[in-house]
Length: 94
Image (cartoon, rainbow, N blue to C red; front, side):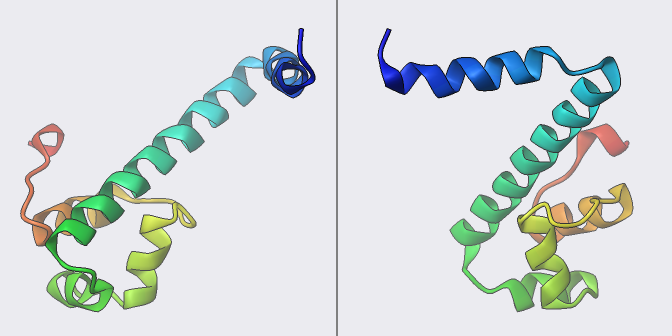
């Protein structure tokens, strides 16, 4: 076994020791990061200006930045208008 695989095993062991609540929080954090990454990519494809997207839904540019970095808790009430501003529709909300 190489030295490069050892840190991964330590991380796997650490995660394996999580309680059910910790596993749930880890999964939620991973989902938030995935959503943030998706929102960032979509906006970049349409043009790199956060303030344009923010203006369309009545938020400050900093709020869009926080959403795209998963630095804040994303509320469905913000997520759905943001998707709409980017030209998408959230089927789960219907």
